[in-house]
Amino acid sequence: MRQLYEYHPVVGYRFVPNLKARIPHEGGGYLLQANETGFRSNRPFVPKATPGYRRVLVFGDSFTAGDAVSNQQRYTDLLESILPHAEVYNFGLSSTGTDQQYLAWREFAQDIEHDVLVIAVFVENVRRVVARFRPHRDAEGVERLYAKPFYTLEGDQLQLHQVPPSAEPFDLGDLSPEEQGAVDNGGRFPLLRGIVNKLGAKEAIQRMTHYQPLPAYDSAATIGWRLMRAILAQWIRAQTRPVVLMPLPLPQHLDEVCDAAPYQARFTELAAELGCTLHDPLPDLMRYNKAERRRFRWETDIHFTPEGHRALANSLAPVLERLLAQRA
Image (cartoon, rainbow, N blue to C red; front, side, top):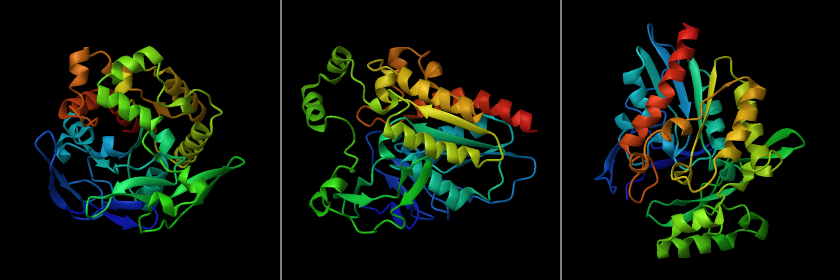
């Protein structure tokens, strides 16, 4: 198996710099190209602004990095064809939490001239920020546990831990009981979820049980949201340029089997407090019919298809156009 990532002592890992690879996938495979900085891009990220162009920096996880599609099919690259004279630098990094994405901004992007910063938060990240270990596949394709940098709240102050994280993988038995409780296992009720998926009744059962996949958004007082909120607040307050905060929904939200209102309330409150621009793309995506929305992701892979990326780009473009016009 081709090695796609390399260890990084602050963020945890990044794409292998200057990597070019074709990745097998249910959609027929896709091309992945990384630049010298270790992010998916066909060009270098240069600090100095390009004369005559407006620049947008975008941070996120695999939904922004573009798992399952080639570089040019991602919503960030499509934005360049929609917005005149725009450069969009995609700092998405697959499987990371918002905490690692903030560290990536600190490590790689603070000195890059830009007009707008977009923080694309796949809403599942509220669980990742409290995790200290996450599963990844090693060079042989075996799933192992790897340490990740993480924050805790000491009063109202963020404290960074596990930097640098260990470069060596762990087995669950290597961890203390406390550490085992800090492993992100991919969601609530993993055993029940596996049984339901095998029976093919996932959507019906979620509807009947009013399933809430992310209870950390139910209250502003949960540890997951308090930690996510503190990370985003520190990140956004450090900016001197406009910021767009963009929560990305789960497939269950697009399928209308769970309620988006809790996470929408939390991000609305946060954006109002910080004075940044909130762009919730869910209402735009829900204007498509059910069959069209289902084509926004693959048959088994939940990541965006080219159609999903196109819909997201069309939703975000007017927001960026307005902010870039104000900057001009």
